[in-house]
Image (cartoon, one colour):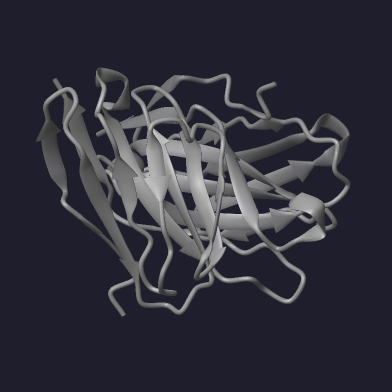
Length: 115
Length: 118
């Protein structure tokens, strides 16, 4: 199993450009998440999904959009990139347990710079 | 309100020393989960441990041990006989059983940078 994969690993965007960060998991997990990590800070939840066709906002959703058409894929769209979106983005997935919350498995991250 | 506090921003120790990383959390839920993740210099996040609020037993895994105390809302992490490879940022995280679901919305602390010198 590859686990959670993310592409690209690095990207530089100009202000106002758009891009999609790709995330794929092969563990058949229902739950998927997008986080951002700013320097010296913990991760903050951007969006999450409990299954194909179902998404919802996390703590910091402004400037982002997501979709979930399949169990495996959960792309994150940045529209009109701004310098404040310079960050490292992590995708994660987890499995709904039998009444339990299980650990999330993280992808390797995408380092995005907006200039 | 910040839900997870890791007051130690940076810790430096010399190899073979023991080191404890502190984590204090805040929640109104009676059912919640606590996690520790390791982020080595390569940047990935590595899961270390999960503990639910009903299990206050301390846990030991090799050189790692965790002390969960509900009375003080703390979930501290100790590395015994530290090694250079332990150098990393360590994150404590809280997941509330949101509306009774099994969806884990993680709230992370800011992390503690541990440097182990040879």
